[in-house]
Image (tube, rainbow, N blue to C red):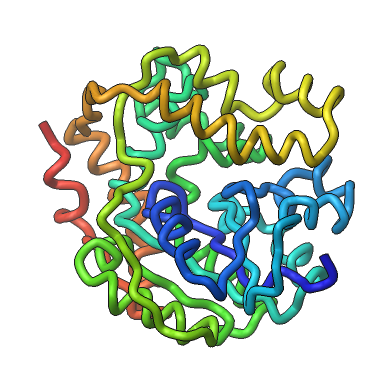
Length: 301
């Protein structure tokens, strides 16, 4: 593929990016990577393989006007910024935001379902482990750090012009999708189209077999290492884009998992964690979420 990727959905996790990805694939002028989550810029061993490896996820490109890719853990990953800049300094970025407390809890519950988070760890335990997990760049488990939106967006804008970013809120995608998509189409400089948003993607649910879920999704799992050692890149892309989603869907249960409820102490700790960043987010980007005593109140049992 000679053309560079034009735009990236870089975050944030559990904020509607999966739905956004699938909705945008309906537009004939957009071509997305065959695999939704391409972690090339985040993972050192993948980045070391170079652009040819990255472009192997775009083998079906047919001269669409813009090319997109997605990986929600790029937003908090500082080393990605220079890597993306050297790949394409004109890259455009779409960022989806969600109330950071709700997003953190959703990320924690998602990790529990997928077997990434120890079943014995409470959300307070996860917060106490945040520092060590950041050192390991385990962004799937840094539910709280990932929600420091002002910090991360500001880091990216130190390298890329502000005009190359479109920042959206998950609730707007739910309640006014037409306006959201029109803003995206204008941002990407493509024609306006009607988008069907009746299907919901990645909705919180249970799983039949958590061990199977962990094997499929965990980075560095035995099955992924086996794929890496024995199969061509084309075959791996096919399995990740076609086979794994079918298994994932079959392993999804309609049974709802128990919702995490914050104690008053946990609620206060999270208020304090996000408060300064939320104030800066409002000041710098005019994006508001609940502050102080109102944040997360509905989550207290």
